[in-house]
Image 1 (cartoon, rainbow, N blue to C red):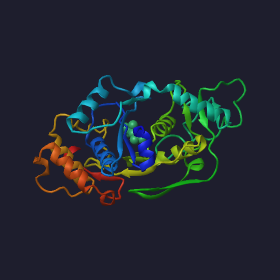
Image 2 (image 1 turned 135 degrees about the vertical axis):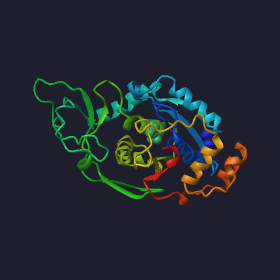
Image 3 (image 1 turned 90 degrees about the vertical axis):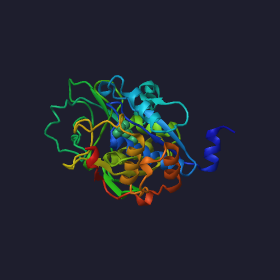
Image 4 (image 1 turned 45 degrees about the vertical axis):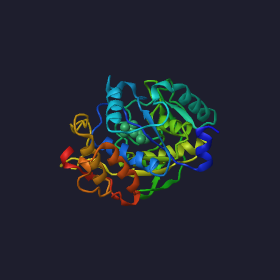
Length: 309
Ligand code: GLU
């Protein structure tokens, strides 16, 4: 029996961590890595690593290597080879062609400038006003390809944030699957990757909560199962902004792994004992695995992490 059959048979969870190589890991990324790792491993599951470099123009040379180095130094152990989105275009293309053959996508000629007046969706992108939905205006060519989003609420029960319902058609509208620059959109790539890898638990930052209903829509159209979701609070700075490269969050690379991991466990509500930051790495992971509880994670979208802001 192969490992995969064994996991299906035993129902062991499959989790994953999927960083984008846009810079070094900061505290918020380590929180997502720790949460996804413990959720999978504490119940005997597998934990996969995927480098989300589908958006090649945003990838920073050397960042992926730095991420792998940091994860190794922090004692994370992943199953199987690292998956690189940049090597998976054929899989995205095949999924896209299935949706196109089913009449679920349409070509769109609208430029960003032409859409500048439409309302903002929750994630800050423009809500699509439906201009090309019933055919391209005369003399115009398709730049991007969008999913035709039907009416109705898409909902799911998040393991941390509770019930989430979104009317995707009203809030976002028909969204892009194949971009004007020829690259597949993150929303499609993540769905195809998680399904192909048999991921059953998606544990990630709450900044992706608003993307989840879109991803569930794509799963349904492609006939994929919907994994369980748990969206962890993202780490914020003193100004209440999400830590990111834009807010100049510090890289964790040079800090002591034990200190950062103990802080991540504390951030996730796991109440690590005093002194865990001084334990050796193996002892720290043993404690974390034995004591992990998703129920203790704060039910918030953002929690300040002043030390790392
Ligand atoms: N690549 C995304 C990020 O780094 C995470 C996507 C996901 O976990 O689904 O924010």
